Image (tube, rainbow, N blue to C red; front, side):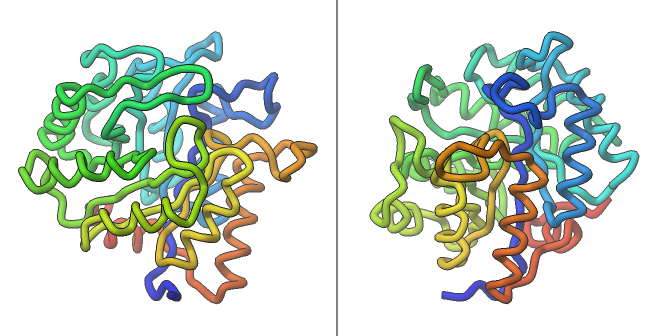
Length: 282
């Protein structure tokens, strides 16, 4: 089914695992992350997903570093939608995971990730207890920050639907990233997209995200079924299947933007994406 609404491109720029050693194009410093975000926006991204690093290049939860990145982006592009991570992959205290949600005014994020279940990655685990999920959800609602649901297997949508139905999260335009191919969670398979789509709320917008070699395939499958796009180095370090060419965020966004155009679909601007997601204009 051809998508009639403009396509949202969500660029996940850094993540917690990529390093310069793994891929020299990985943006690490606030300046590099902001520069990559702005470049991806020029290529068609309307959402950027932010993971900060400390001065040693290690993942951090500190809101001051988030603030530095957000300021650098907003000083050049006020419309670009900024989503911040509340991941507990390397720490699992609510005070740390929710620290970024306390940012205010010009450096307040538009959205924040909410992983609605626990799961295993290839080498480690991500623990998201029911209490933690609901605490983060409540704080997002209190602060006026839109949740970005991260779902790695269909059962996580069941939890998201519970939060929406109980109005723990009040959102008329819920947004989901649905992931394929991460070992330990939903594989890249037709049965998985059917399961995801059967559980998503009728008013949901969703982006298809593939991990590693499945990224481009999952993106194209999502486009063909009415979904939007998540791409970037957080999910995939390589441009090719044989892992011979390192990708950059810019090359990944440019490639999928070209695919969208070849499919005769329209890429959503940040203003259009804000309207689709029910976010205020800046």
